[in-house]
Image (tube, rainbow, N blue to C red):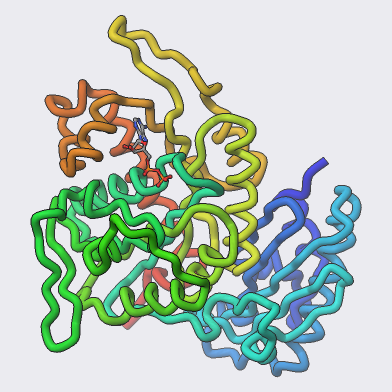
Length: 401
Ligand code: ADP
């Protein structure tokens, strides 16, 4: 048994809006995410009637308590006894009006007020997290563990989006092991600083910034959590990004203190989880997904890297058990953004600082790699659009004169 989005929607259809309709029928449910024992729901009480007044905080707290009781009871029926539930009430523009977090004993707390004072509780997204002026979507690329191709996916996603005409920035948040200088071929370039502002590198059609160009990378970076956090913040805030459609952040691997702190310190529009097909890798990816969702960050989808190998005979070999990550994504109700094959050209192009070559069949060892990467980019774009629509930020406005 597993708790799914459908179960939660069913629970929400039993919760009444003050108008007398239930929340689902009234269209108030903007998003539902679930992963193992964590779930988050996003509710807009004024959906369909932006001029209506928001309910008072007391009313929202009461509705939140009913949502909590209903979802929790459904979760128990599915064998989840200790659900961690986040309820975000948002206005029709997607701004969080109130954030409630149900602890595993079922006590709903108003986290919009209390989190900043509780050093043991991660600060939720949108409360104290930094946005970046001029940047439309900030997307984290995370993985449950290192070596699965997280940076490779981040780099290729950024370049793929730029090839489709978007303005894209890439931030190497993997501050302990920055790989962007190598993958983007930045070694011969100097970091330029103008009036205290870091100027991003411009290569392969994207802007990028990396700790690897600010410190000596052959010395180990022995930074404790707060130092890493401070360095990351400076990279984000002191870089002159300009207007961007997407800022892709390559997070440090894992779900420990550092990736968690970094993920919660910037206002993310969503996250992509990278995973290889094996069962052990999936377990790590489930944790990465749960980390994002516990922060109230929507997982836009899962990418299966090193999915299969195409031999010289043209045959496809499922070395690691192709499809494992896709099954995992389905189980978690996440979208699947695509499968990237194990490919010698991909490795050589990335390690040689020529990632744009991955998109050209002549330098990518044939058609299959460019196709796989472009498919991933298309899926990603669709998910961002769907997510923006469900958060209400990109809705078309109908003007009647
Ligand atoms: P992570 O960021 O998860 O630690 P990287 O993206 O740095 O992993 O990838 C680790 C190594 O594996 C790099 O040398 C990269 O070029 C290689 N690699 C990643 N994905 C693939 C792939 N699909 N095919 C071949 N090599 C790959």
